[in-house]
Structures are given as C-alpha cells and as structure tokens.
Amino acid sequence: MAKRRSLSRRTFLRLLGGTLAVGVGLPAEARYIEPYALDVTRHTVPLPDLPPALDGLTVAHLTDLHRGLVTPDSVLADAVAVTNALRPDVVVLTGDFVQAHYRDAVPLARMLAGLRPRFGVWGCLGNHDYFIDSNKVTAALEAGGVRMLRNAAGEVAPGLWAVGIEDTLRGKPDAHKAMEPVPRDAAALFLTHNPVGVFACHDRPWLALSGHTHGGQICVPFLPTPRPPGMQGFPLLAGWGVFDQARLYVNRGVGMGMLPLRFRCRPEVALFMLRRGEGMPDPGPGLAIRAFHTARRVAGDARDGAKKVARRAGDAWRRAQ
Ligand SMILES: [Fe+2]
Image 1 (cartoon, rainbow, N blue to C red):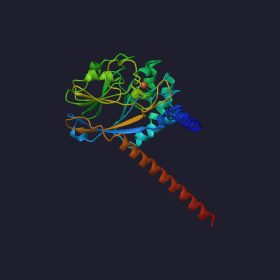
Image 2 (image 1 turned 45 degrees about the vertical axis):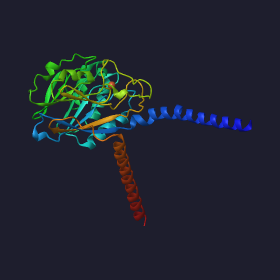
Image 3 (image 1 turned 30 degrees about the vertical axis):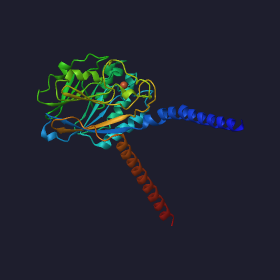
Image 4 (image 1 turned 90 degrees about the vertical axis):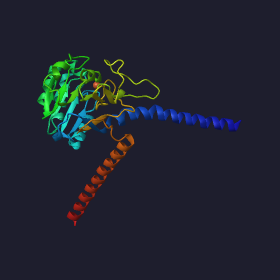
C-alpha cells in the first residue's frame, strides 16, 4: 500500500510540474520572449523582366507594425535597426502601420525615417490604417519619407516599379489604375496588405508582397490557426505561394494585433534578393540554420561587449597607476 501511495505522489508531482510548465512557461514565452525574437528570413527571387543592371538588388519587407498599445516600441525600433543592418537597396512596408489611432503614425514615422535605403521606402495601407483616418496616416508616413502608394505606382529604379493598392477590406482597391503607368515589360513589386490582392496581378511575373495574417500570431498545436477577416478560403497564411505568373510572399509581420502575444510564430523581417531570370523563389535557409546564425550574431555581440568592458577596465586600471 505504501509503495502505491509513493508512486501516486510521484505521478501527482510530475503532473503538477508539467501543468505548471505548460500553464506558466508557455504563456510567459508567448508574452515576454517570442514577440521580441525577430526572425530575419532571406529569399532569392527570379524576375524575368528585371533589368541586368538591377540583378542582385535587395528588398527588405516589413509589415503589420501596429504601433499602439499592443506592440512595444522597442520591437519596432529593433525591426528598424535590423533592417538597416541588412543594408537593403529598397524597403517596402505593407500596411497596418497603426493599431487603432492615426496619432500613432507620427511617432512611427519618426522611427521609419531612420531607414535609409538608396532607392527609398515604399508603402501601402492596411485595414487598421483606415479605422480613424487613412489620409492622416498617409500624411504622417509621407512626412517621414515613406512613398505611399494608394492605387498608384512609382519607378523605384529604371526598369523596376513599385505598385501599391488600397486595402481590399477597408479601402477601395483599384489595381487597374495602380498598374496603368507600368510598362508591360517592366519588373515590379506589387504591394497589397491583404494577400487576396495578388489576384489583381496574377498575369504579371511580379513579386507580390503582403501581410495581414501575422502568420496566425498565436499558433497552438492541434487548434485551428486564427484567420484574419477578408480572406475567407484563401489558402496561405505565411510564406510563398504561386498564383499563375505572380509569386506571392506573405510575411508574418513585426507587431501584434488585439493580444500582445506570439506563439510559434516569431515576428519577421524578410529580405529578398532579386535576380534576373526565370524559376521559383528560393525560400532560403530553414529555421534551424537561421537560429544558428542568430545565436552566432548574439554570441558575437556578447563577445564584442565583453571586449569593450575589458578594454574600459584596462584603461581605468592604467589611469589609476
Ligand atoms: Fe495586421
């Protein structure tokens, strides 16, 4: 009998430990670790109409910054710093700049003004940007140096265009108007906050970039991944999709909507290298290799920090002699 009681106590303690680990550890990870664990994904994208002079051009893609109460400013500042460290030629931003109020666009635009790619920063609006006043959000971002494309296009560099449409859920998208200035044989980046916008450019061999899904944001095993509004039936929540001639990338985004949680869905900055040619995008190294490179970067930063501390301590010691 005594043995049976001992076994049941051990089992009880194991169950209690497991429950505590799951009940406390996973929510803490989702609240305090994962939202800050920015993931840099790298991709190579062939574009048949890319001018030879632009072969190798790099594009950084950030989306769903959601400046406001839910996303800490430190996450946004980190995303800007990481993007600058990647030294992209172009930066594109695909909407949901603010969570719920246009006033958040002003401090966000100040942060984004720190981005300095040689071919500029280009953006389109997301559904959250329309909640209060999309014109004021647009004005604030443009004052910060972002070229906002609302059913419009602009030439990024000779032979490469950026095309942006209004949000498919809250705006009045007009892809025909947006694409009108683009020569038929030009390469383009097609910016649509909602991935469903890709259907408007499916007959062009372009790179379509979107967000909106946050990759699901909270991806609990064995439970359905949350789907945002306005994309019922759409097959893709994150990553690459091929839609006739267009290649679509759905970015998991930087910020968070509704809940300040991310689980099994890290925030993302995507970097694309454009190559002149045919074929499918190369999705780049997997999570394990990215984690290795992140660990190496963190270790390098720590080593540099330790060297600085040692140098300062040495200087202080010499001054004291
Ligand atoms: Fe969003």
